Length: 293
Image 1 (cartoon, one colour):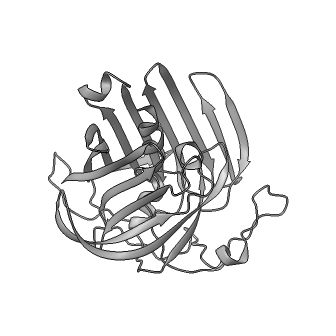
Image 2: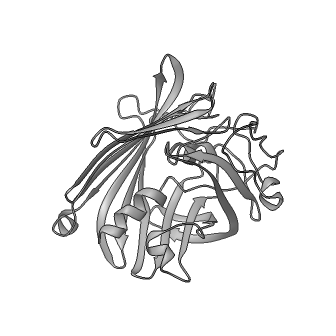
Image 3: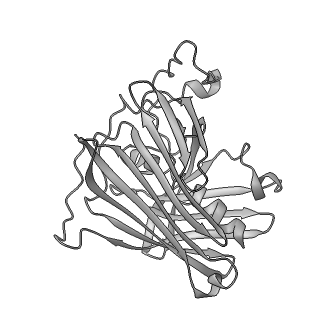
């Protein structure tokens, strides 16, 4: 069952993204190791620094998910956003925690926490950290993004391993912060998105297609939802061994753009994550939309 969580933490929420505005392709700095985008992808490049954005999520918003494998419920996850500061800069702190239930604990116990700090204007990531307790494996990693030098650095505090610096583009997002960046955008069926992304160890382009709009019943009720599918041709693990491996995401087709469900089919079965509860700041009960500076 370990594969469920290794894949889930990579694609459950960090890849819940969709496409929107077509802008000029990024200019790769001279001497950079960043690959040039092929023409067919360059036309879909979205520049986080210049694209129009509008927050759709509430300050203090808390999203709770149930995770499962086939018919079994195996874990729960909580995604929360709150205003913060990063080195005195206005920021949003985004936290994603996941833990297996008592049933799954008997096979593979998971207690994970990922945290992203993104700029208050949703234009870039500052830092991404992940504390992973999975079975017998413990990891404590950190990726720091420097918007001035356009470098990212990675460190595993558990092992002492350090990687970098690696080149990044202006407006690069981490795999978790990108979720909220995309929730600030408008998109329709047929749109595509290419956005600069890094985990600190390497730079890559995230590519997602908005393939459909459906009316479907979810745990929260019946919603119209956009159907999103990422390009998984370069994904390893169980997807590499699955000829017809698939990942599909559902975003509510309203102002909130809630990530309602994720599902995937691979060689060893089907795993899914379903949004089961939406809350706001427990102290103030605020439902005010978060402000983008």
